[in-house]
Image (cartoon, rainbow, N blue to C red; front, side, top):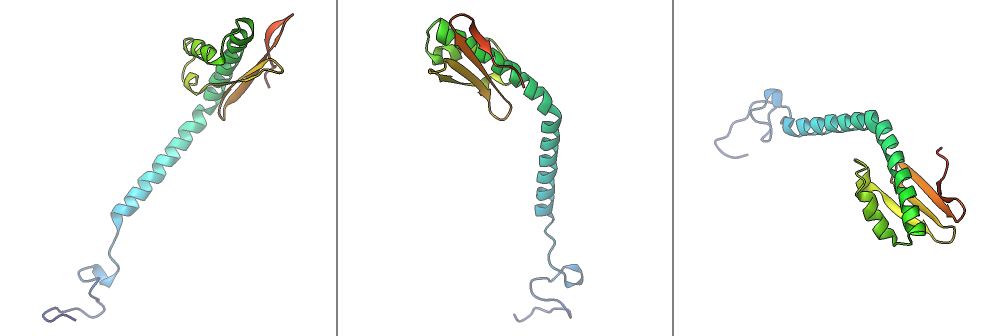
Length: 136
């Protein structure tokens, strides 16, 4: 114990000046934690309310993307990267930047997908052209 310092009964050097000798209050970290939790709950609610609209928009984007990419790839015989740039010009909305294309040359099918939301394929046949798969 240092000289010249006095403590009341029940106090220790780390709790001097706090009421009843309790541990120091750590309010700023609790506020930060609570604000973070409230923010996460609000984000989850926003996502829950907009999920159906996002899913529908993604289904339209993937269907359009698969159809256009199939025709571009197998009718026009252009590279898939060129087809992707044509789809980007269509202005499909929020999900257009998330759209990815893949090709199966053996079955002559192009698949467009938006992760976690939608996926659609279009197949090419010489007598019918490009046809979309049925929606689920």
